[in-house]
Amino acid sequence: TDKPFGVNLITMHPQLTDLIEVCGRHGIGHVVLAGGIPPKGSVEAIKGFGAKVLVFAPTLALAKKLLRSGGDALVIEGMEAGGHIGPVSTSVLAQEMLPELHEDYLVFVAGGIGRGEAIAGYLEMGAVGVQLGTRFACATESIAHPDFKKAFFRASAREAVASVQVDPRLPVIPVRALKNKGTEHFTAKQREVAGLLDSESLEMAEAQLQIEHYWAGALRRAVIDGDVENGSLMAGQSVGMVKAEEPVADIIAELMSESEAALARR
Ligand SMILES: Cc1cc2nc3c(=O)[nH]c(=O)nc-3n(C[C@H](O)[C@H](O)[C@H](O)COP(=O)(O)O)c2cc1C
Image 1 (cartoon, protein in one colour):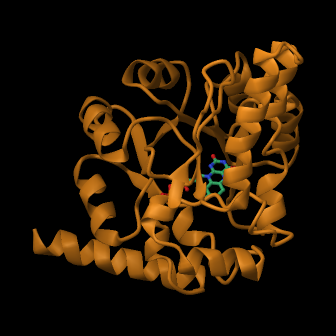
Image 2 (image 1 turned 180 degrees about the horizontal axis):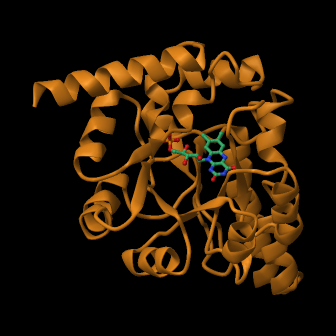
C-alpha cells in the first residue's frame, strides 16, 4: 500500500529489537508497543527512524512516565477488551486518566466499545480516538476462519470470559476469550500441574513454563485453522454486538454516524 500504516509489536517478544529494526527498514510510520512496559531503548530505537510510538499503560503514574520519556500517544485498555487484559474497566481507566492527561498528551481509549455513542462519550472526555478489536475481527476483510466468525456471531457478552488462575504458584496472565473446551482443559491442566507440584514430581520453573506455554499458538489455531473448540477465541465483551460479516468501511461508517448523532444531540 502507499497509504500510511502501523505495526503492533508485543513488548515481551524475545526478538523485539530485530522487529523494530525491520519496521525501520520498511519505513513504518507508527509502532504500537503492546502487552507490557516497553523495554529500555525500544522507544528510542523506534523514534530513531522517525516513527511515532504508541504505548500502553495500566496506571496513571506509568502513563505519565512513558509519555514524558518519549511515547507520542497512549492507549488505555480496560478489562472488557478481547485478548490480554488488566484488572480495571475501561470506564474507570478513562475517568482516572483522561482528565489528567488529555490537555498535554494524545490518549486513545480501548475495550468494550461496540457503538458510536460510546466513542462520542470518550471523545467528550478528552480522548483523541478509540481502538476497537472485537468489532472488526469478523469484518469481510478479516482472514479469520468462517468457524471463528460463526462463533463470534453466536456469542453474547457473558460468554467472553477472562481466563482464571487456579493456583497462586502458577501465574496466569488474564486473557478474555469465548468459553470453549480449551478453557476447561486449561483449568484442568492448572489443577494437574498444581498436583504435581504438591507431590514434588515437578520443579516450580518447569511447572510455570507448562502453564505459560499452554496457549502458545492457540489464537492461530482458532483464527486460521478454525479449531474453535481447542484454540483461543479471543473476544471482548462487545462480541454480543457483532452479528454479521460486514466490510470495514460499513462498520466505520455506522460507528461514525452513531457517534455524530450522539454528539449532535448534546
Ligand atoms: C482476536 C484479538 C486479537 C488481538 N490481538 C492483539 C495483539 O496482538 N496486540 C494488541 O496490542 N492487541 C490485541 N488485541 C486487542 C485489540 O488491539 C484492542 O485493544 C481490543 O480488542 C479493544 O477492545 P475490544 O475487543 O473490546 O474492541 C486483540 C483483540 C482481539 C479480539
